[in-house]
Image (cartoon, rainbow, N blue to C red; front, side, top):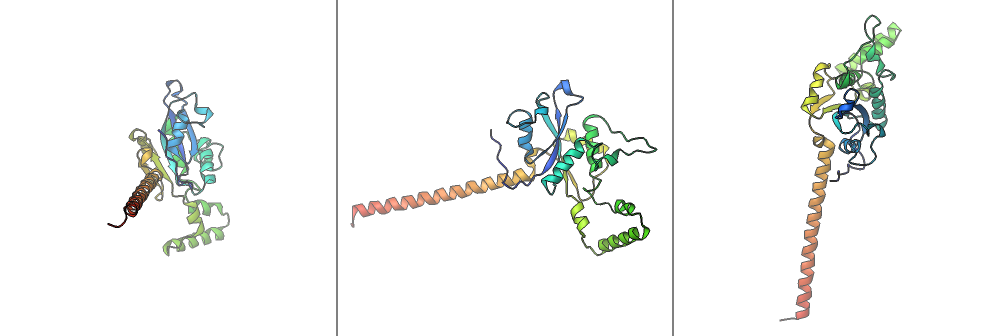
Length: 247
């Protein structure tokens, strides 16, 4: 069964988390990646299609836990993939490991901890704009006071400034099953401009639009074929009348 191709301009840019169902790798069977077609990508990891990641071949079969999408560009999605894969080395994500009294913060092992890191990352720049962090970074009192007044005035008068428009990524976290959706209960709620949902891959908007476009193309083909057949019948009838001659 072939997977229908997405439009030439992909409307899905996201990262995903998959888990190995092989009992030999139960403790370390997690993988994070980037994709423009999650349905095709999970089939590649499971060997059903070519071009799967070599790191995941020995740990087959795989099951997708969650995907986060809605990035404005491929570069930003790849940066998020790197930060989520190795958060301690990433300049973006390593701040979430800062603990209290010099002790580093620890997360749960396995998929639960990986989802916790995901939700914590979505509260950081550049995925959400935080005025407190920007003001705190300004050492001069007058600069921080001016920034505070500026952003408060813009928020009161509903003026969208470029940092707010650029930094607030409208990301969407999608859990594939109810079993894995329980993992979000241990995490802090996402910012107001982000969404969390539960459902299969086929219900994503990118595949719905692809199905609608396919149905529209089929209807157009059917209408064209019906019109062609009618024209052909009319031509045959006219030819027969011409051969018979006048009555």
